[in-house]
Structure formats: structure tokens, C-alpha cells
Image (cartoon, rainbow, N blue to C red; front, top):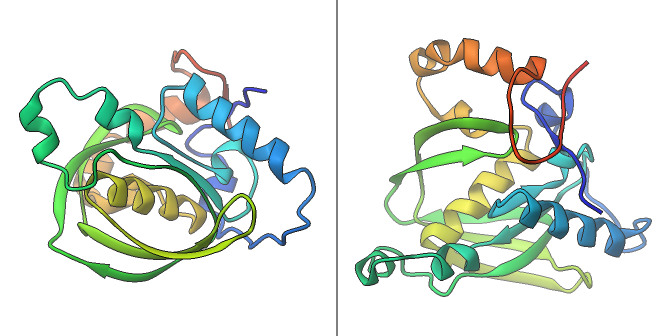
Length: 193
């Protein structure tokens, strides 16, 4: 089932999310709905707070980026091809490494706004998968960026928190329009209030 994406301004997007247990009710159904929602909205990552659940779950599908690259040279920019399609449960950052680099990010919860965000090139994560198998793994490049973006969501942060106060001030009207539902997108959204 395709779920509505929570829009900017909804309080769930600012909550630090709770860990879940292996017996979490209807986990597989929730994950299936999240994958369906992610792909219906043409995203590459989706966190549980974006579907109005304050739990530490997010999905990353960086495979799409590599499948859709046009120029051969473009792939050389990212050391993490062919990407991943993965569930992260109760994730924690163990280590950040590599030089920070800028990339123009967007977010399904903040549609039609994109900004350059600087993030580390390498992240080591501890997490559980959809079968509650424990993993500790290092990710790089665009995959690391998507993971860090989605990890921010389960920590109550948004990509716009990484930009200058001046830039945030300049986009205030657009952000207000999003929170009031004065925006047209081609996926279902849940607006505050």
C-alpha cells in the first residue's frame, strides 16, 4: 500500500525516533509499504518518520542512481556502484571518514526545494536488516550520502538544517507553502494540522 509522505512542518519529522524490537507488530507489512511508497514517489531513500512512524527504520535504494546514469564518466564520480537496496533498522553511526563533499540534495518531505549539502564521503553503520540480522558495514560515495540523509530523519533532522541560516530564511515562504499544503506533487502527502 502506498502511504502518504509527511510534509515539512509536521512534528514527527523533528522527533528522535525509538528503536524497535524483533517482534514489532506487522514489520514486514510496514517495510513492504515503505518500499512501495518509495518507488511510487521516485525517491532513493525513505525513513519511517516520513510515513508518520517515529521508529528507527529507513530504506536506501542507491541502485536506481547507477541504473539511471547516462554518461560513462558519471559513474567514475562515485566509488560505490552498483549501489544498494537495503533496510536499516535501529541504525547507529559508528564512524564518519573521508573528505566532506557537496551534493545537491532534495527530500520527499520538502518537495521542489534542493540545496547543496556537505557530508562525509564514508560512513560506518551498525544496523539490523529486515530479518533482524546484525550488521556493521562501511559505505561510500552517493550511498553513504543517502544513508546519512535518511539517518538524519530518524534523529529528527532535515537536510535544510545543514544549510546556512540565510539560505533557510530565503526559502521560508516556500517552506510555509509546503507545510500549508500549497504545493502540487505527483505523490500522496500528509500535511500538518
